[in-house]
Length: 262
Image (cartoon, rainbow, N blue to C red; front, side, top):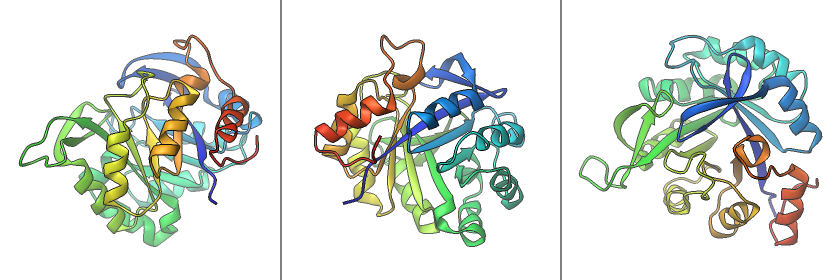
Protein backbone atom coordinates (compact mmCIF):
# COMPACT_ATOMS: atom_id res chain seq x y z
CA UNK A 1 0.00 0.00 0.00
CA UNK A 2 1.29 3.45 -0.90
CA UNK A 3 2.08 5.59 2.10
CA UNK A 4 0.57 9.04 2.40
CA UNK A 5 2.95 11.96 2.34
CA UNK A 6 3.14 15.01 4.60
CA UNK A 7 4.59 18.06 2.87
CA UNK A 8 5.70 21.17 4.72
CA UNK A 9 4.88 24.29 2.73
CA UNK A 10 6.90 27.50 2.94
CA UNK A 11 5.57 30.78 1.54
CA UNK A 12 8.76 32.76 1.02
CA UNK A 13 9.28 36.52 1.03
CA UNK A 14 12.85 37.79 1.04
CA UNK A 15 14.32 34.45 2.06
CA UNK A 16 12.03 34.06 5.06
CA UNK A 17 9.01 31.86 5.69
CA UNK A 18 5.74 33.73 6.19
CA UNK A 19 2.21 32.61 7.02
CA UNK A 20 -1.02 34.08 5.70
CA UNK A 21 -4.78 33.56 5.96
CA UNK A 22 -6.54 33.25 2.61
CA UNK A 23 -3.36 34.54 0.94
CA UNK A 24 -3.43 37.81 2.91
CA UNK A 25 -1.89 39.34 6.05
CA UNK A 26 1.41 37.45 5.89
CA UNK A 27 3.32 37.37 9.16
CA UNK A 28 7.02 36.59 9.46
CA UNK A 29 8.01 33.19 10.88
CA UNK A 30 11.68 32.26 10.36
CA UNK A 31 14.59 32.05 7.90
CA UNK A 32 13.70 29.48 5.25
CA UNK A 33 16.86 27.38 5.59
CA UNK A 34 16.64 27.18 9.38
CA UNK A 35 12.98 26.10 9.36
CA UNK A 36 13.72 23.60 6.58
CA UNK A 37 16.43 22.04 8.75
CA UNK A 38 13.98 21.73 11.64
CA UNK A 39 11.33 20.09 9.45
CA UNK A 40 13.86 17.69 7.95
CA UNK A 41 15.10 16.56 11.36
CA UNK A 42 11.47 16.04 12.43
CA UNK A 43 11.05 13.58 9.51
CA UNK A 44 8.83 15.56 7.15
CA UNK A 45 8.40 13.61 3.90
CA UNK A 46 8.77 16.50 1.46
CA UNK A 47 9.17 20.25 1.34
CA UNK A 48 7.62 22.76 -1.04
CA UNK A 49 8.82 26.34 -1.27
CA UNK A 50 6.79 29.06 -3.00
CA UNK A 51 8.39 32.43 -3.74
CA UNK A 52 4.97 34.03 -3.41
CA UNK A 53 5.74 37.46 -4.85
CA UNK A 54 7.94 36.39 -7.79
CA UNK A 55 5.09 36.04 -10.29
CA UNK A 56 3.30 39.26 -9.38
CA UNK A 57 6.64 41.12 -9.39
CA UNK A 58 7.56 39.49 -12.72
CA UNK A 59 10.96 38.32 -11.50
CA UNK A 60 12.91 35.09 -11.27
CA UNK A 61 12.55 32.80 -8.29
CA UNK A 62 14.88 33.48 -5.34
CA UNK A 63 17.65 31.10 -6.39
CA UNK A 64 19.93 31.91 -3.46
CA UNK A 65 17.27 30.83 -0.96
CA UNK A 66 16.66 27.66 -3.00
CA UNK A 67 20.37 26.86 -2.68
CA UNK A 68 20.44 27.51 1.07
CA UNK A 69 17.40 25.31 1.70
CA UNK A 70 18.67 22.52 -0.58
CA UNK A 71 21.88 22.30 1.47
CA UNK A 72 19.86 21.58 4.63
CA UNK A 73 17.42 18.90 3.43
CA UNK A 74 17.81 15.49 1.78
CA UNK A 75 14.18 14.80 0.87
CA UNK A 76 12.12 15.69 -2.21
CA UNK A 77 12.11 19.48 -2.50
CA UNK A 78 9.72 21.35 -4.80
CA UNK A 79 10.03 25.03 -5.69
CA UNK A 80 7.68 27.44 -7.40
CA UNK A 81 7.17 31.12 -8.09
CA UNK A 82 8.56 33.11 -11.00
CA UNK A 83 9.16 30.06 -13.20
CA UNK A 84 8.71 31.42 -16.73
CA UNK A 85 10.52 28.98 -19.02
CA UNK A 86 12.82 25.97 -19.28
CA UNK A 87 15.85 28.03 -18.34
CA UNK A 88 14.20 29.00 -15.04
CA UNK A 89 13.30 25.36 -14.41
CA UNK A 90 16.86 24.28 -15.11
CA UNK A 91 18.31 26.93 -12.79
CA UNK A 92 16.02 25.84 -9.93
CA UNK A 93 16.86 22.16 -10.45
CA UNK A 94 20.56 22.98 -10.65
CA UNK A 95 20.21 24.91 -7.36
CA UNK A 96 18.96 21.76 -5.63
CA UNK A 97 15.24 21.43 -6.28
CA UNK A 98 13.89 18.03 -7.29
CA UNK A 99 10.54 19.21 -8.66
CA UNK A 100 9.23 22.43 -10.17
CA UNK A 101 5.81 23.83 -9.34
CA UNK A 102 4.12 25.92 -12.03
CA UNK A 103 1.04 27.98 -11.30
CA UNK A 104 0.40 31.49 -12.61
CA UNK A 105 2.83 31.16 -15.51
CA UNK A 106 1.25 27.87 -16.55
CA UNK A 107 -2.10 29.65 -16.87
CA UNK A 108 -0.48 32.33 -19.01
CA UNK A 109 1.52 29.80 -21.03
CA UNK A 110 0.28 26.19 -20.67
CA UNK A 111 3.02 24.99 -23.01
CA UNK A 112 5.50 25.35 -20.13
CA UNK A 113 3.97 22.20 -18.61
CA UNK A 114 4.57 20.15 -21.75
CA UNK A 115 8.02 21.62 -22.30
CA UNK A 116 9.06 20.90 -18.72
CA UNK A 117 7.74 17.35 -18.84
CA UNK A 118 9.57 16.68 -22.09
CA UNK A 119 12.85 18.18 -20.89
CA UNK A 120 12.95 16.90 -17.31
CA UNK A 121 10.24 14.23 -17.04
CA UNK A 122 6.66 14.47 -15.79
CA UNK A 123 7.82 13.53 -12.29
CA UNK A 124 9.57 16.91 -12.11
CA UNK A 125 6.53 19.02 -13.00
CA UNK A 126 3.85 19.82 -10.42
CA UNK A 127 0.83 21.85 -11.48
CA UNK A 128 -0.25 24.03 -8.56
CA UNK A 129 -3.70 25.62 -8.65
CA UNK A 130 -5.24 28.35 -6.51
CA UNK A 131 -8.96 27.53 -6.44
CA UNK A 132 -11.93 29.49 -5.11
CA UNK A 133 -15.64 28.71 -4.84
CA UNK A 134 -17.54 31.13 -7.04
CA UNK A 135 -20.82 29.31 -7.70
CA UNK A 136 -21.88 27.25 -10.69
CA UNK A 137 -22.23 29.14 -13.95
CA UNK A 138 -22.02 28.48 -17.66
CA UNK A 139 -18.39 29.63 -17.65
CA UNK A 140 -17.51 27.82 -14.38
CA UNK A 141 -19.58 24.62 -14.47
CA UNK A 142 -17.85 23.08 -11.42
CA UNK A 143 -18.39 26.19 -9.30
CA UNK A 144 -14.63 26.41 -8.65
CA UNK A 145 -12.51 29.04 -10.43
CA UNK A 146 -8.74 29.27 -10.90
CA UNK A 147 -7.00 32.36 -9.54
CA UNK A 148 -3.38 33.43 -10.09
CA UNK A 149 -0.77 35.87 -8.76
CA UNK A 150 -1.16 34.97 -5.12
CA UNK A 151 -4.94 34.47 -5.45
CA UNK A 152 -5.37 38.12 -6.44
CA UNK A 153 -6.39 37.70 -10.08
CA UNK A 154 -9.43 35.76 -11.33
CA UNK A 155 -8.88 33.87 -14.59
CA UNK A 156 -12.42 32.93 -15.60
CA UNK A 157 -11.18 29.32 -15.92
CA UNK A 158 -12.99 26.34 -14.45
CA UNK A 159 -10.64 24.63 -11.99
CA UNK A 160 -11.51 21.06 -12.96
CA UNK A 161 -11.15 21.74 -16.66
CA UNK A 162 -7.79 23.35 -15.99
CA UNK A 163 -6.35 20.50 -13.97
CA UNK A 164 -7.51 18.02 -16.60
CA UNK A 165 -5.73 20.06 -19.24
CA UNK A 166 -2.60 20.35 -17.09
CA UNK A 167 -2.46 16.60 -16.47
CA UNK A 168 -2.93 16.01 -20.18
CA UNK A 169 -0.01 18.29 -20.97
CA UNK A 170 2.25 16.21 -18.74
CA UNK A 171 2.08 17.41 -15.15
CA UNK A 172 3.09 14.50 -12.92
CA UNK A 173 1.20 15.77 -9.87
CA UNK A 174 -1.48 18.36 -9.18
CA UNK A 175 -1.61 20.46 -6.02
CA UNK A 176 -5.13 21.72 -5.33
CA UNK A 177 -5.04 24.73 -3.02
CA UNK A 178 -8.34 25.96 -1.60
CA UNK A 179 -8.24 29.75 -1.28
CA UNK A 180 -11.38 29.67 0.87
CA UNK A 181 -9.82 27.29 3.40
CA UNK A 182 -6.23 28.53 3.28
CA UNK A 183 -4.94 29.36 6.76
CA UNK A 184 -8.40 29.04 8.34
CA UNK A 185 -7.58 25.83 10.29
CA UNK A 186 -11.05 24.56 9.37
CA UNK A 187 -9.95 21.48 7.41
CA UNK A 188 -9.41 20.69 3.76
CA UNK A 189 -12.09 21.24 1.13
CA UNK A 190 -13.01 17.57 0.76
CA UNK A 191 -15.68 18.27 -1.86
CA UNK A 192 -13.11 19.97 -4.05
CA UNK A 193 -10.66 17.10 -3.63
CA UNK A 194 -13.28 14.50 -4.54
CA UNK A 195 -14.15 16.43 -7.70
CA UNK A 196 -10.47 16.67 -8.59
CA UNK A 197 -9.83 12.96 -8.12
CA UNK A 198 -12.77 12.19 -10.40
CA UNK A 199 -11.29 14.48 -13.04
CA UNK A 200 -7.66 13.26 -13.21
CA UNK A 201 -5.65 10.12 -12.54
CA UNK A 202 -2.35 11.75 -11.55
CA UNK A 203 -1.45 11.99 -7.84
CA UNK A 204 -3.20 14.82 -6.01
CA UNK A 205 -1.83 17.01 -3.23
CA UNK A 206 -4.36 18.75 -0.97
CA UNK A 207 -3.58 22.22 0.33
CA UNK A 208 -5.38 24.78 2.46
CA UNK A 209 -7.11 24.44 5.80
CA UNK A 210 -5.27 21.88 7.93
CA UNK A 211 -5.42 22.80 11.61
CA UNK A 212 -5.68 19.51 13.53
CA UNK A 213 -4.57 15.89 13.09
CA UNK A 214 -8.25 15.02 12.53
CA UNK A 215 -8.24 17.10 9.36
CA UNK A 216 -5.42 14.97 7.96
CA UNK A 217 -7.24 11.77 8.89
CA UNK A 218 -10.43 12.98 7.19
CA UNK A 219 -8.52 13.89 4.03
CA UNK A 220 -6.78 10.53 3.73
CA UNK A 221 -9.78 8.46 4.80
CA UNK A 222 -12.40 10.23 2.67
CA UNK A 223 -10.45 11.09 -0.49
CA UNK A 224 -7.75 9.56 -2.67
CA UNK A 225 -5.27 12.40 -2.03
CA UNK A 226 -1.71 11.09 -2.04
CA UNK A 227 -0.25 13.93 0.01
CA UNK A 228 -1.20 16.81 2.28
CA UNK A 229 0.34 20.25 2.46
CA UNK A 230 0.69 21.39 6.05
CA UNK A 231 2.07 24.67 7.34
CA UNK A 232 0.08 26.46 10.05
CA UNK A 233 -0.11 23.42 12.30
CA UNK A 234 3.66 22.98 12.12
CA UNK A 235 4.95 26.49 12.70
CA UNK A 236 2.38 29.30 12.58
CA UNK A 237 2.52 31.74 15.53
CA UNK A 238 -1.26 32.06 15.15
CA UNK A 239 -1.79 28.45 16.21
CA UNK A 240 -2.79 27.69 19.82
CA UNK A 241 -0.65 24.55 19.43
CA UNK A 242 2.01 23.59 16.94
CA UNK A 243 2.39 19.87 16.19
CA UNK A 244 5.55 17.98 15.40
CA UNK A 245 5.71 15.82 12.29
CA UNK A 246 6.33 12.80 14.49
CA UNK A 247 3.14 13.51 16.47
CA UNK A 248 1.12 13.76 13.28
CA UNK A 249 2.54 10.57 11.80
CA UNK A 250 1.91 8.64 14.99
CA UNK A 251 -1.70 9.86 15.08
CA UNK A 252 -2.27 8.89 11.46
CA UNK A 253 -0.65 5.47 11.87
CA UNK A 254 -2.72 4.82 15.00
CA UNK A 255 -5.82 5.61 12.95
CA UNK A 256 -5.04 3.28 10.07
CA UNK A 257 -3.48 5.74 7.63
CA UNK A 258 -0.30 4.35 6.06
CA UNK A 259 2.57 6.79 6.55
CA UNK A 260 6.33 6.68 6.36
CA UNK A 261 8.00 5.94 9.66
CA UNK A 262 8.67 8.96 11.85
